[in-house]
Length: 487
Image 1 (cartoon, helix red, strand yellow):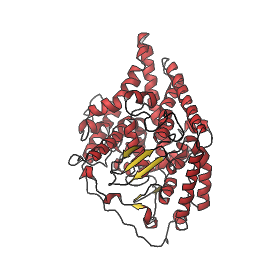
Image 2 (cartoon, helix red, strand yellow; image 1 turned 90 degrees about the horizontal axis):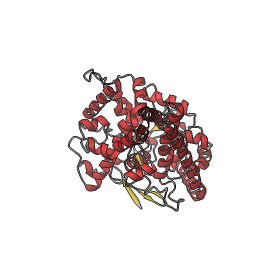
Image 3 (cartoon, one colour; image 1 turned 45 degrees about the horizontal axis):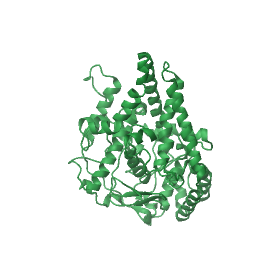
C-alpha cells in the first residue's frame, strides 16, 4: 500500500484495488502555470540585449514574488440549505430535477463493472501504446541529425507527449495496478525513486513524485474548486490590463519548465513539511503558484539549486546535451542540427500539451464550485462530468494524438481505470448522463480550444454551480480544518 499526503494534510492511499481518500486538514491551492508566467507587468529594458521572452519571464517572476505575500482570506459564502431552485438560469434548470443520489449510484455501479472487466487485454493495449511511443522515439532520434525537419520534430514531440499524457499519466494513477501481475506498470514504482527509473519510464521536466501530488491528488479531488491547481479562470485574473491574447500565446511555449516543474515540486515539499509538522516561512502563501524566476529570487521552501539538481537539471542536460552529444564526434553541424530539432520538438510538445490539457476544464458550458466535496460521493461524480469535457473519441489512432485526454470525463469519474476501459465506458456514461439529464459536453478539440481561449482572455466566463443546491451531506469545508504546516 502506498499513501500520498495532500498539502492540506488529507491523504490518498494507493492500493492494488484503487484509491482510498482520507480527509484531514485544510487544502492548499496551487495555480495553473500561465497565471504566474503571465501575471507580471511588461518588463523594462534594464536587461539590455536579453530576449523579449527572457525579460518577460523575469518580470513575471518578480511579480510572483511580490504576490506571494499572504493576503487576508475572503470569507466563504455559506450554503443556503433548503432554499428553492426557483429563478435558476435556463442552463441550470436541469439541477432542480436531478435525482443526484440515483445518478451517483448508477455511476458507481458502472465503474465497478468496468473495473471487473479489466484484464490482460488492458495490459496488452497499454503495451501497444508503449510500442507506438517507442516507435516515435526511434524515428525522431534517427532523423534528428538532419537539418531541422518536420519528421524529426513531430516524432520527438510525440515521443515526449505520449510518455506523459498516456503512459506516465494512467500508470501513475494506478490504472494497471489490478491487471499487471509483473509490477512493471504499477503506480507504486513507475518512474519513482531514482534518476535511472525516471529516465527509463517517464522523463520530463516534472519530477514524477511531485506531479503525482499536484495532479493525481490536488487537481482530481478538488476539481473546479478554488483549491483546484488547474482552475484557469481564477488564475488569469492576475493578468490585469495586459494583452491577454499575447500572454496566452507566450504561455503555451514555456509552461512546463517555467511553471509546472517548480510548482509541482512546491506541492511535494509542502506535503513533506506537513508530515514532519514543520511550519512554512513567515509570510509564505502556499496558495500562490511557484515559478522558476520566483525560486531564483526568493526560494522560500527550496533553493534553485535543489530544483535544478533534482528536477529540471537532469532533463535539460540529458535531453538537450548528452543525448545528441555523440553526433559531435562526427561533425559539429550534426550536433547542432540535433539540438535544434530537440528544441523545436520541445516547443511543439508544450504547445500540443497546452491544446489538449488546458481545454479539459475550461469553457462557458462547464461549472465551477464554491466548496469541497467528498471523494466518490454523488456530488464528486456529478462534478467530474459537469466540470470536464471530452473531445472526439473512439479509436486508438485518434486517441493517441489526443493523448487520451479526450476521455477526460470518464477519467475524472474513475481516475484509476485503464485507457481501454475508458474507451469501453465512454458511450455507457454518456447514455447514463442523457438518462438523468446531466450535461455531457463533447466537442472537437479546436472548438474547445476556442472556448478555452475565451476564458483565458476574459471574453467569457464559466458557469457557477448554485451553492444552495449542493447535496449537503457530500460537502467538506476544507478551510475549517487545521493546517499544521501553516500554523
